[in-house]
Length: 276
Ligand SMILES: [Zn+2]
Image (cartoon, rainbow, N blue to C red; front, side, top):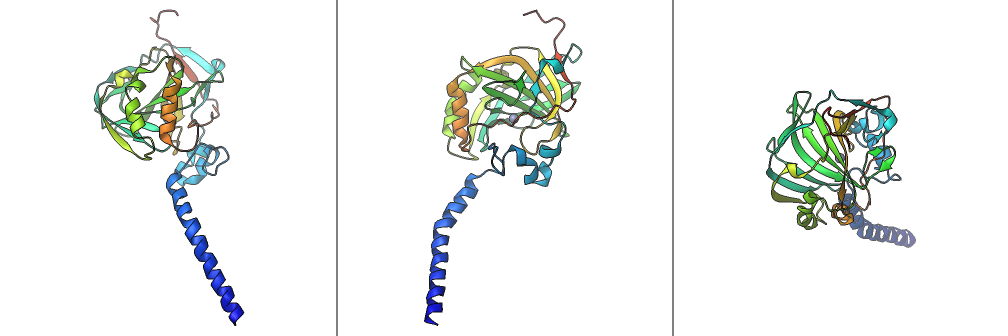
């Protein structure tokens, strides 16, 4: 009997010790862990995104996923798409640390819109991926910006911009203090005042067009992608600042390239474009 009591007591003590040491660590882990991540080995990594929630299924079984490799041999040059008609305007913006990226967002339709095929898509937010998610002829760049636009009925159009290491990007330079201020604050937000999206320079009227998806869950398809061909520059420090601010223990937030699956990629070159 005494032996049983001793056994029970040590059992209870063992459970108490386990609770004391494991519970705080466990809850910490849950707090730090975002719903998905970029580790190939993780259960929440890109290869498993489609299994995490039923609404995220397209991430696994979608056939028009992004990003893709934009390879010359798959590109058709066209002139009928027309220029990207932007009517961006300065508006109050909020910078948010989403845990997997930094996002700058504008309210409603205040920051203006882009017009594609006669449809107006309001600029909602921009965010950054490093290294780039899309590749050009297999080449990956240091940073990729996504300008996300949406119609009132939920259609999405994203403009993608590529950057390599070089001179500072002026738009990111204007955000450096704000980025630093919300480092370490997952889900932290900061009102950054009036930001003019025209400050995000495209640098060329040439762009690639294809139909793809969001590159993060829920990987929603039928996203109209316009990818500016000009590669701009950013400093190593600016790329580092975007990444450090996010504190997700991963040094990348780039989804691997997805299958093209017979989709066509068009390259729009205006007829009046000067040869360069
Ligand atoms: Zn993105």
